[in-house]
Length: 357
Ligand SMILES: NC(=O)c1ccc[n+]([C@@H]2O[C@H](COP(=O)([O-])OP(=O)(O)OC[C@H]3O[C@@H](n4cnc5c(N)ncnc54)[C@H](O)[C@@H]3O)[C@@H](O)[C@H]2O)c1
Ligand SMILES: O=C(O)CCC(=O)CC(=O)O
Image 1 (cartoon, rainbow, N blue to C red):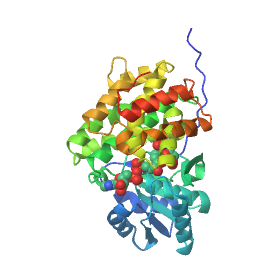
Image 2: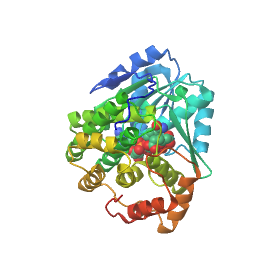
Image 3: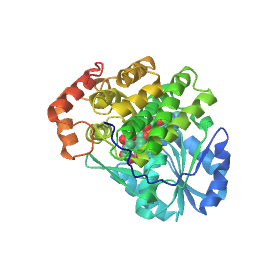
Image 4: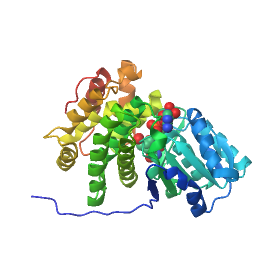
């Protein structure tokens, strides 16, 4: 017997401009947000891009802070907060990937400054009220509507410099958001539509992006997918896949998007038997007959992405610790997670073997 339809849905505010030339709307978006003293945030390698963006903002750009780091270490958050106070900023423009946007979110959380996001990866942080902070080797995440960017400008021209390997793994990170949204305890028909379309758009765009990183249409389609997948993450509860990646990132400092890329097929294979509707949606999105986990594993291989935790630098001896850290906080998952099952999943992912249930 089918379960009767029942759900709760809380829409989040979204103000999005997508398309080549979207960055030209930045001054309008700053006007719309009523900001006068902007701190521009970026990772060290995006300083040139951030300087160009500050030039577009003009005298309202009072500082460029190029110190964003992955997983937002507590000391880097404290330094950005101190600097925002020093320059008397009333808002931030975060330019770059999830690291820059994540830093903006912590400044928003602690100091109340609205964030305008100009994402240049597909991580999707710009569409979520989720913040993350890493302290003493432990990554904490939380939700707060104040950290959701007030405007998001997706300009594909800003992503042509994103290397192929980062583009592919970042796209897989986004797909992971949609996959987990499809079996989240708080999924809804609206989110399911966005998740299916997000996976469809990204899985089709990534091979084109990998073939030609200057293909603006492919870049725009990838950003469209990233937007939808990020919105799915923002609207639902994360399950095994994300919790496992947080344990690997926070405890072992593994790189975020490559870790998602390696773990996703294995976490999905683990859950597939308990999530038939999610599998059906993924099969429609990917055009696969039955097994989206294997499809994603093959896709990662075809696009030259890493497929083992070993090649990301994880020592095999750390598997038991990651099992413990992952199991320490209970979370929703369609299938019960045991130490034995998680250990098996991690050993397969560590060795780079194909995913199995
Ligand atoms: N809170 C959320 O909802 C959420 C969602 C996804 C990711 N995240 C967080 O975001 C971080 C990961 O984000 P990410 O994968 O985007 O990493 P990132 O921001 O560190 O960027 C990855 C790499 O891409 C480079 N890069 C970015 N834009 C570029 C461009 N235009 N040209 C050339 N190189 C460019 C960066 O310098 C970096 O080396 C993690 O800390 C993760 O936890 C948070
Ligand atoms: O794991 C993800 O890709 C999304 C959640 C996340 O990274 C939270 C954060 O650290 O900001």
